[in-house]
Amino acid sequence: MSPMLRTDRLYDFVVAMTHLANAHGDAEDAMLERARPLLADLIAKDDWLPEPFTRPDATRYSQYLLHCDPLERFSLVSFVWGPGQRTPVHDHGVWGLVGMLRGSEISIPYTRSEGQPALRAGAPERLTPGCIEAVSPRLGDIHEVANALDDRPSISIHLYGGNIGAVRRHVFDPVTGASKMFVSGYSSGVVPNFWQHARS
Ligand code: FE
Image (cartoon, rainbow, N blue to C red; front, top):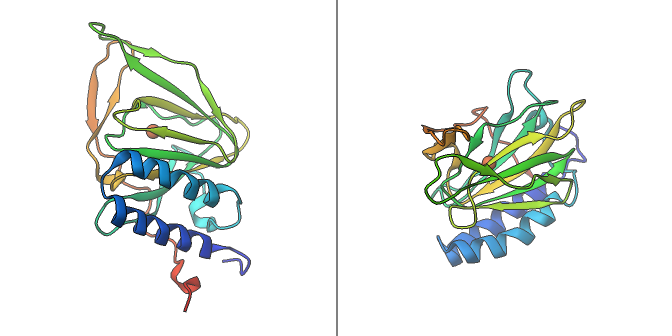
């Protein structure tokens, strides 16, 4: 690990999020509003993410757990997209904030029209470093995400209002509207050690 790596910034983020969760619990509006500047601050500089959590996989996008609140009120995940990789159309079931750290990704929102089984794609949104996108069952929870770059990896940092790797959620066939339950899990069983930088 590089001695210059600012894992103390990850530590500070987790501490601040823990205080937020203590103060606002499962109040989605308050959590989304107050967590956004914390995430913005974390992704403002690409100087804190340990290298093992930046590695693309040749076969599919990676979801590395960085931290899960012991009470499962929030979790933080590093999403690493290999060139050209994309998700299926999916939902989350909890609130989420997606912050772009490195490279670029494209998110396409989907909505359901009354009485129509098919999902309708909205305007694609391109995220560049520093951009944050919000999702939740209330705000709009269904989207499809892809690496916008076909020649290198992209990395986004995802904050969710639960232990996202264990949440029962859905993938969709946008043409038929058919959905299938899935649980994403995480790509690795290890988490970064930011405690060595904790204040004494
Ligand atoms: Fe998503």
